[in-house]
Image 1 (cartoon, rainbow, N blue to C red):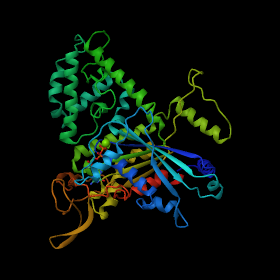
Image 2 (cartoon, helix red, strand yellow):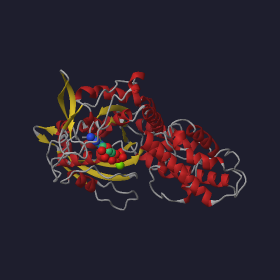
Image 3 (tube, rainbow, N blue to C red):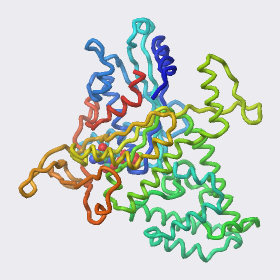
Image 4 (cartoon, rainbow, N blue to C red):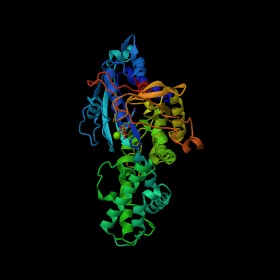
Length: 491
Ligand SMILES: Nc1nc2c(ncn2[C@@H]2O[C@H](COP(=O)(O)OP(=O)(O)O)[C@@H](O)[C@H]2O)c(=O)[nH]1
Ligand SMILES: [Mg+2]
């Protein structure tokens, strides 16, 4: 919840027509639905700006005397930014084509900015002109957050923990070629680039096999799966090594792999955790709960573990010097005092990125289950994402069940003598609408009996035909609730 002081500050800013700046990070493991979520959010905001009621909850908030106070929504030009741009148009064209297709797969970070022009509520504010809200959206792979524990480990610690995990089923079968190669190596062997690259390629294959064959998610390093910038730079060519304490002698394989591991961790810290990551003040965490449920027990438990690590990242920087200084500065500001922040050396200004004020945790693709099961889905999400609430100290955390693009609708079908709730859509590769009874969604930790038999299935539906002009937005489920929770207070 925002405190009263910040509400007052926001109110004053609005009254004098100033600009609010929201930095919204959207994350989730790959295939969680980030690209479709952002495409739908942006398209529906653009349509709302043109007077279409695409996001009813926001529209209600913005309507005064029968008039919508939102006068325009624009995508801002890219400028001279360093980050790749989110391909909004290409994604929308894919969805709105004659043969609608899901946007193509992306694994990198991407960004897009919108400007919302709003007529202020107050008479004073209105005299001063529109109130503007700038919304910077950042899409980044949740897999990268799994690297956070690595940056606090030594190469030897990371190697030992990773190899222990690789020896457990079902990882062991996926990692067999890598383990066979690696166990023949010694840290004291002379450094050989061919060996390092071969080991790296085999380790990467093992991670991919764990994800593709078993739906596993707790896989490190995240950038071996979701490449991102400088994806073929030599510092990425490492792998976990047995006995990696023994890396003191230069020119050995152990020293080479350790140096690369440390360079990788430094790069993640400097270019991601300490810079990009500290700039957000809103976070959306997308979780494909249904996909994890469908992939079976190991995948589900591994997803839970990955969420635990991702949630811990919300605490990043909290106990650091700069984090504490940020709190002191906020208190001073509260007391109306000015304060100069100094770094540990006493002469460098300390970095104080904005804190995340709100976190929306979302179970995606909820159109796969009929309405009557969506409460269960929300409860299951809460169960999975419990650590988020305890990690996001001081932030408002909300839980949602949503579909960014509704590809299936609710219906009923007769099974035996009973009418049962189903969802109806066109399965990918087919051309007729079918009823799908997808099965049960447990309302919390799935009981033992759930895993015994396949109780749940998840077909891929074809996206529906949508208005190619974009003016009608994109049909969704509850996207307006999420946006209202995240930015409603500023409108
Ligand atoms: N039925 C349905 N499928 C969805 C929805 N959102 C995403 N998907 C499916 O999930 C896939 C992955 O989504 P995407 O946004 O590319 O995931 P990302 O890797 O997190 O960016 C898509 O290709 C769709 O098949 C949704 O709201 N409804
Ligand atoms: Mg994507």
